[in-house]
Length: 160
Image 1 (cartoon, rainbow, N blue to C red):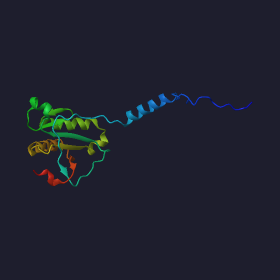
Image 2: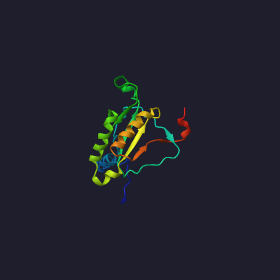
Image 3: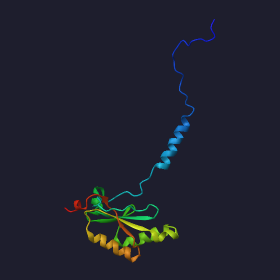
Image 4: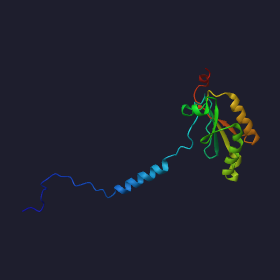
């Protein structure tokens, strides 16, 4: 008689599912932390011009975005085909830019107000008149830190 007996079948033991809830919650927590929600829904066409000497903004400074361009296909019937201004998730007039910047400043802590940068995301087919009007409104409310958002590429491709 032997002390050791050989197993008759070569069956594998069942997989332990004891750690499965831990793995699921760890993945859930990871995706909750790593996911970035979209801030604004674009209601305009926004094909940005390209430039070859581009500088990236610091994320630590507050940035307010002003979008300019023709309404996208979903909004052409209601708003026409002329270039429009979009502030957050709604169309606005030039006279609304000043109060928008004041509201953005009011939402900031007092020490961050001088660092507020207004980033203009202007469609490359937009007329310069609307950009000049927005810049005049920004001057009236003393928002002098202005940035033009562009893509990276050869600037000569902007010329048609």
